[in-house]
Length: 231
Image (cartoon, rainbow, N blue to C red; front, side, top):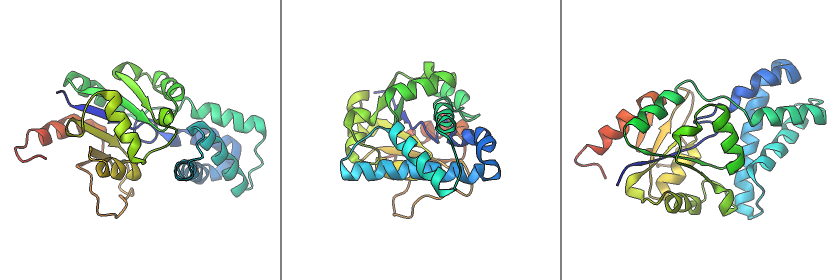
């Protein structure tokens, strides 16, 4: 069975802080910090909704997180400003290492999927705008499960949709919670440590592989799989 790669999208393939340039026009020197708080609240709201079983899709979490962040920074954003930011969030850029890494993974015969908390429509638009949609066999969105990562059920859902099993599937993510969630569910996982300041949550759960760039992803996975003692 061919190796299957489940690529997280937001923060792994797509640069969520690519919104900063537009934010600078709205909130000036607060743009970078504003972007970080917005992202943190977006994730927090998805976690809370998953636990509460009070599901709304990721775009609602994103919008409500923007409302919170605007209030937190006392930034007088108009409805038009917020709509402009939310529209920009739907066409964020890919990181520089993404296209080459996906091309190498495709050349090596991996089955490639996008696996995201975002809705299928939103992810479709993101990947298409970034010029990388053609590398993916399909988009697997947790929206169909009415929950979010790291609910263990969504990783099982991915395996069913990709018609694979834990022994042949790798999650690829820059998000610590996602890596720990996948490992806890029995999958292998690559943590993409995009910044030396990024920390893995100290839960005693380690990624199968850690990379600093997606450029070495295919080589690292193939090397791991060729090791006789690899689990």
